[in-house]
Length: 101
Image (cartoon, rainbow, N blue to C red; front, top):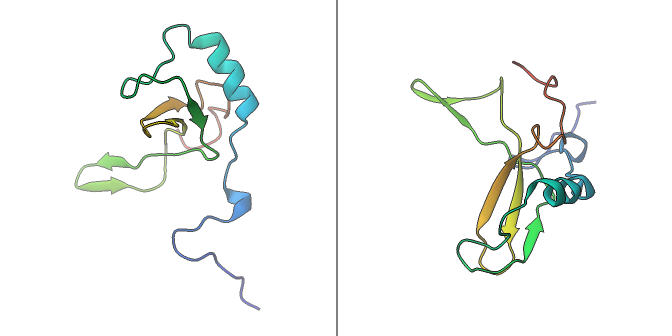
């Protein structure tokens, strides 16, 4: 029998890395020493997104699919939606050796 595939645009749950929010909070407590206010709204009300994000990398003539990437944690201002991205590998959430170099 054929294996069912997720619909286009939907990731299988086991393939979707979940953000360890307690690790993100601990990292932020240690590293974010300056003002914690949103540059747009001025509020200090941040949401840690549930999912990691990886932007597409531009290559000559188009987008590169596969290979090295830059997984990011999203911090979203609850008031205005301003979004800040932090490198998940440098935060210690992912192993830098897991992937193509």
